[in-house]
Image 1 (cartoon, protein in one colour):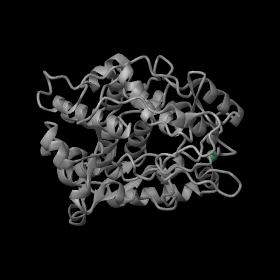
Image 2 (tube, helix red, strand yellow):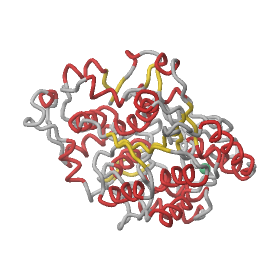
Image 3 (cartoon, protein in one colour):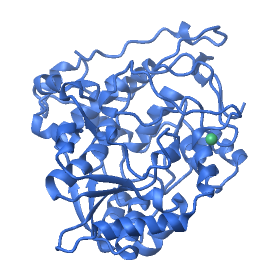
Image 4 (cartoon, rainbow, N blue to C red):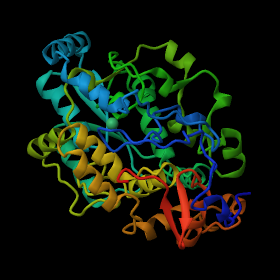
Length: 434
Ligand SMILES: [Zn+2]
């Protein structure tokens, strides 16, 4: 039974506590990168399908000079021989280019600026025949849907996989309850479905993702163009958790079928072994610059920034197609003290769009803003009503989600080493600006 969230004990969040508790295995000593706005609380990519509430997080590494791994990677990027890399890409494309009328590479994406850039470059500059594949957002924004169609309109075939809407909803609610990570089911689909589709649906041996995880601070090998298969495959099916819940429990209690779970699932190692699959980052071969991707997509395909500022940040062109995205970054703010303005500013500082002082001012102004704009629709989406979910709803003490519920639940995920409660307000114990 998922019980209604109880009020937490505020004594754990007093202002001058000596050793406040720490959740998620985070570093008790909060530090900020000297070059950008990231803190050492930022989790790095991991196997999403193993994630439980008490999983110890891997976090962004800092070196002895107090600089984060993502910033160091960007320094390395300046020294790369990009002509050589381009030549390597050409050779790779020559090897895989189709001569038999099949598509020869798969480009996963939403039709946002990065996937637009990737597909366009591969097709029009490198002479490839890409099939684009999209894992549908939970709830498309109007502009996200328009951009998706502009992408297709720029000369690409697309395969849109929309998972069973009821399954996606129930998984999203469970991921919120158990992990405070409502975006997890979407991320699972985004990571697992394209490699699965490449092998099982399309028989296309080459998949291109865009920018490299390492650029956001994941300690992956920056000198390896391929995406580590641990992110989309697993040895044992019995280990898999989706929304922090075992497959058996999902089927038994929540009206979810095995068939509908399949697109969320990582491949089995055995399935991978018997096939030829190369999953590469285009960002290894081409110098990735997010703002340039935006201008490129706007120029070549009519990509449009969102007409309004994205909640929790100042930007208008980053990851704007899913209404639930606002809540994703709000939950990272609650769990790690890192909101969307931190993510956006850190990236723009590294790419020299803004300086650190400007970045810090933006974080101070926007980070952690409650995403009001789609909240009613999202609470409806997260509500497991009796009519639509005649069996699953019984597992929730309170099936209907509302703001009060959401706020009580948020508090359960605030780590006392990050948060203090004083004068009736939640405040970060440490911020990038003081
Ligand atoms: Zn940094």
